[in-house]
Image (tube, rainbow, N blue to C red; front, top):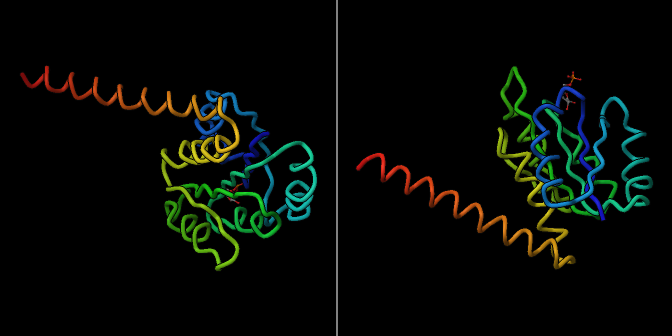
Length: 165
Ligand code: RP5
């Protein structure tokens, strides 16, 4: 079982490194590819319909900016879950990407995360949650991650209280 992280351009990758790191932290295999809905449409279909599933891909994460149609095109060619990651590119800052990724027609779902730093991490965590439905070990690691996150916030709150006296 693995996750495919598709991006419209290599210029997206620096903002997706945390997504890859999060998947790796959970021990989830990830295949990252530059595949563009507009510039390499045939390659997208080849990967989504054939190469990806044959190599064990169960969830597609699709990052694109501007006229961000990658996630929608992927969703049109698969029944596997698709998570869209809108990139916060200039000149419009990501609202363009967010709307073009999220506003899918009924019947072709794309679960869209937010723009900005949290989006790529949340996309990875959604993929982990989906895979954890059929993997007890992964479900356990997810539980530990959530407890660790809670503890970190408690520690930050305690530090703030100590600082304020
Ligand atoms: C989108 O166009 C890509 O996902 C990227 O966010 C944006 C710009 O791509 P480049 O011109 O940097 O290749 O398709």
